[in-house]
Length: 260
Image 1 (tube, rainbow, N blue to C red):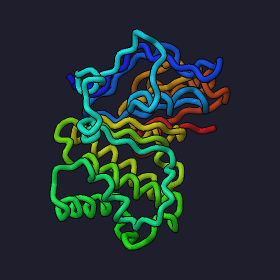
Image 2: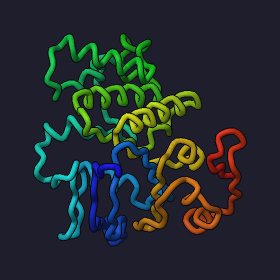
Image 3: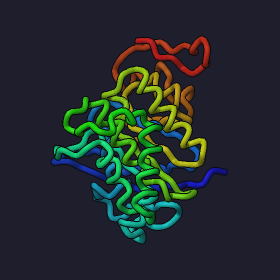
């Protein structure tokens, strides 16, 4: 049985008078890539932000645990070694070189400068940004910036041991086709190695191809939770997205293919 690396109970969140999350309870397992799906404004990114502490649940009965310990018991510098977050976008505007941005991920590591540089170099190779090492960060394209930050997050997690959670908020939105697949393949590899990988995504077909588990949100609630074949049904998609689709099996890989 897989270990529950993240456990959430009774999450409640409102903005103004709109309910974003309505007493949501769920968990995320080690060795599993989970994709969170749902229409715009249905609470996907907010769920990630509550996990990381950027937002706070409004329910007094909310409980959040990391690796079977209450989230409040973790010191920020300690949990930072185990919980890596790639947001939708970054506000970084300084003229840092690419390598310097990636090295920011090594701040909390217990290692020498040369060791951290070696870790950063390895992660830049994994995210295919080694060729950009001398470039100034503001000159990069949106997709290049996203891959640089992914290398930074992987560097941050270099000493996570067997307790690793990777949270990615729409990581493929700015990427071209090949980098969409290479990024998700890397995330899948990390899940197979034992990490809990949690991804917010809009592309249903990419989600179907790479996810072990899909979590579908609508109007602040979980409406479907299971394998791609269990969640991506014509009925679920029509109810949640208000759009008629046809589901077929991919001719080579047999995951559900959504045709609109």
